[in-house]
Amino acid sequence: MRSEVLQMIEESFFTIAKAAAIILAGIAVGQIIQHYFWRRHLWQKVRQRQKECQKAFRKLDDDLNSLNFDEEALQAICNLPTSELQEGLQSGKYSALEVLAAYQTKALQVNKRLNCVTEPILEAKANAKSLDEHAEKEGLLYGIPVSLKENYQLKGYDCTMGLVNYTGKLFKDDAVLVKVLRKQGAIPFVRTNIPQIMMTYECSNPIYGRTDNPYDATRTPGGSTGGEAALITAGGSIIGFGSDIGGSIRVPSHFCGCYGLKTTPERLSQKGISSLSKGQFIVSGSVGPMARDLDGLVLATKAILCDYMYALDRSIPPLSFRDEIFQSKRPLKIGYYVNDGYLQSVPACQRAVMMAKTALEAQGHTVISFDPPDVPRMWTELYLKTVAGDGGRKFYEAIQKDIPDRCVWNLLFITRVPRWLLWCMKTIIRLVTQDPVHTEGLMSSKGCRSVCEWWQQAEVVEAYKDKFMKKWDDLGLDGVICPVFACVAVPHGYVTEIIGAGTYSMLYNVLNYPAGSLPLTKVTSEDVQQLENYPNRRYFEKNIKKASEGSIGLPVNVQCVCLPFQEELVLRVMKEIETGLKSMGDH
Image (cartoon, rainbow, N blue to C red; front, side, top):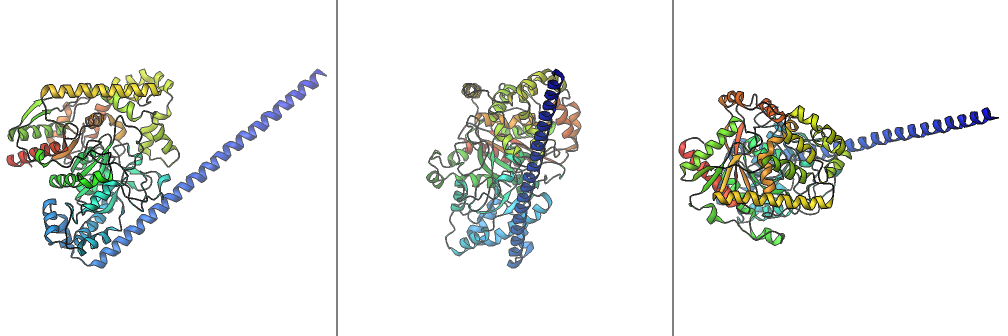
């Protein structure tokens, strides 16, 4: 009797186990099938979006062919500096439609080589014709074509940020800055590429593909405003607009060799600028112009700092462009550094800063050594822990439900590692990288664990700002010049290996200081030879040294920084450097 009971129990157990296995297998198969169809659906959306963009490109090409403008004349327009282009449009020498056609033609040519444009703005032609039909030539940017980073909202367009799930979600209105640009007579004509989720120095996504550097197709143009920088540098645009939360305007400008300005976060309206970082205000992103030349950068800044912007966005202080600051002849006291206390910049970047120092001194300014305080701590405890305050959950969830770009997926790997496991691996990581700061950075990327800790984080950041400001004031500085990045443009797919090189830019996002990126020189063979003396012990140092091999001829920018709401002074410092170099015959 007992054996029969045991046998029945045994048979029941196996029956239940078999049923459970079948159910689990069914669930697994179901999930695999569901995942397959979901991925298939996403790729269908990608192909649909790509077809729409290709159709728009073909329509633009047909429109340009029907205009029958002389190609040499159009090319000559694209070669004009901003001041001459503005003068030609105001005088009537060039029509808005003619200038638009010139830049549309050039943008199409550049895009075939670099893949920097996501789509043309087809209403641009009607806008140009409308301007030409009116006798009044109103606005500082009258008739000037302007390119926009893909995250600037436009009526009738989507902002994907490189995420497939955001395709087809069309906006009903323009961003405030787009409205201001139109009011000033500018013609938005193309949208430019970005990295997926816009939180990396690469520039690729599964919808629009990868953008290449104008100087070397094997290297990245930088991110997240990489498409803008590539297009402007290659001549396909003269003025553009981007956004910046960790160097996203300044680094692409440096990697490609154009001009860029990260403004104080509260100086320009960010209404209608798409971002996954909204809701996090301790380290705020900002927006700003980019341009082929300094005159274009100044003109764009003047144009958007106007009463119309304040009327559209009352949260912005009514602080118009102060020409008296930009035109001032007062001697300045400028700090400089080539080593931020964490990663030394490569020889080319050091040389560029010293060139800027010499130029400023030639203009009668005082330039002194400046050491930014606690940069390693700034990067790990302040920047990374704040930007990834939720442990990167918002970014990861957006990627997890989408088609992830490999570069971004690798960057967000840390979000998938449990905090306890990362803590256990801490010693091993430190031994491998030979860099305790890098290790602490990984730990900080797990963010804050409670609301209380988040409040404490805000207090720590404010304390650092006070400490930095005190050092600045004790030295009586008007501004600071330093590298934009620890090295020049890096090979594609290599960004995650040198992410610490961005501390030079990230610092001023933590501080909320305005900063400009000014092209000064190009990497020489001597710069590359001097890499032999570059530190080679820690993980990032080794990778920076490796990434800098074969970099001869790549552009090198300098970063110019001033206190909050002193954008005019930033532009003045940039102008003083450029003027000084020209007087010395070096620019």
